[in-house]
Length: 113
Length: 110
Image (cartoon, rainbow over all chains, first blue to last red; front, side, top):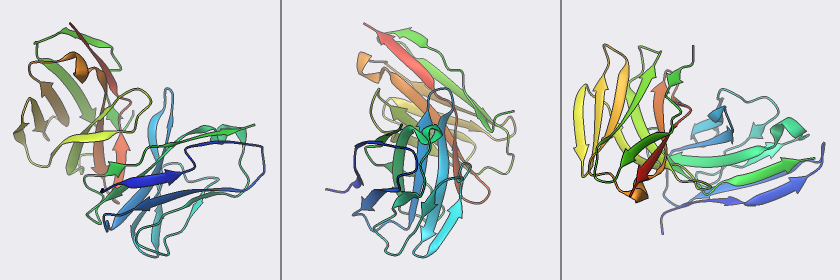
C-alpha cells in the first residue's frame, strides 16, 4: 500500500530532551516536507526537501532540523524542544520535485512539558 | 495580509445542496492551487488541484481558478453529510513552498 508513515504517533516529552520524529514514504517520491498545525494558525511548512541531500527552510524552521540522506526518509529533529513546539506535526511527500500534489502522513501529536 | 485567506465558517448547507468554498491568495506569481479535505483528527487529503484559469471538474467537485482576481473556489454538488469536514486551500509560491489557508469548516445537515 502506497503511504507515508510517521513515528511516533503520539509523544509527550520534557523541555530540552532531544527527539526525532521519523517519516518514511514508499512511493519513490522526490519531494518531502514537514508541517505543523496549530489552532488558529493552520498548517505551516517547517522544512522541505526536493531531493536527496537537498533541504530548504519553510515558513517556521526555527528550532527544527531535518536531513535527507535517503529518498524514502525525512526525519524531523528537535534538538532542544520547548513548550511552544507542542503541536500536531505532519509529514508529506510529492511525486514531483516542485511539491505539487502532496500526500500527507497520519500525523504526530507532540506535547512538550 | 495573509498569503492565503479563507472564511473559517462554519458554512452550513442542507443535504443535496451545492456548497461553495472560496479562497483568495496574495502572491501573483502563484501557479499551482490545491484543495484538501481534513476530517477532525485526521490528516489532510488532496481532493482537487488546478493549474490553469477556468473550471476543472472531478465527480461532484469543481475547482475554479481566476488568476486575474487571485481567487480560487471549490464547488461541491449534491452535498452529503460525509462531506462535513474542514476544507483547506493551498497554493505553491515561489520556491516550491506550499502555503495553506486557515480552512473553512463545512457542515452538511441531513
